[in-house]
Image (cartoon, rainbow, N blue to C red; front, side):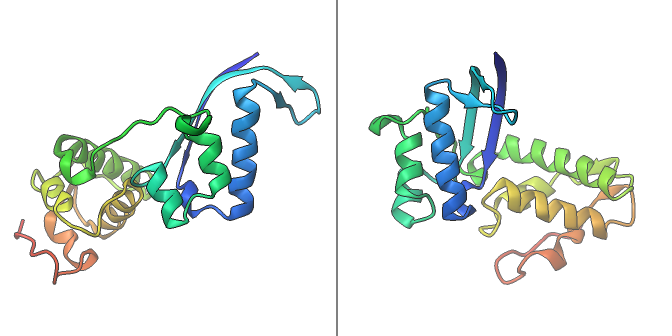
Length: 173
């Protein structure tokens, strides 16, 4: 008996064949039927979490999530999912601050740099940028900003070349 969690992010960008495999996996998990690589059947007691941008219905309507995967996930049509709604990053200022700090630490380790602090206004500036609406975009921006960082503090000015200045004027810092 296996217990665990599996989080899949960005399924809307997955190829139709990958979405079909995921839909099949969801159906099998709903019956607690999983076949191990050895071919032996196993019982699975875990959670499969799938993140989509916007709502699952919207993703299906936009064509980023297949009808098959929608039916396998959406509880309103017999799917295995439980829908949780999260506000946009711009509406979760405290989360953005924590995420910026986390991604800065992660980037510093990956790039063998020391970033001991993040400018306090950086999260607010990032949350107001309309081009940064997902965790993946935020992570990518912070990774690039740390790459451009030449000191131990991640400063606002490190974001200037990374953001479209027509959309956002950054204060100096």
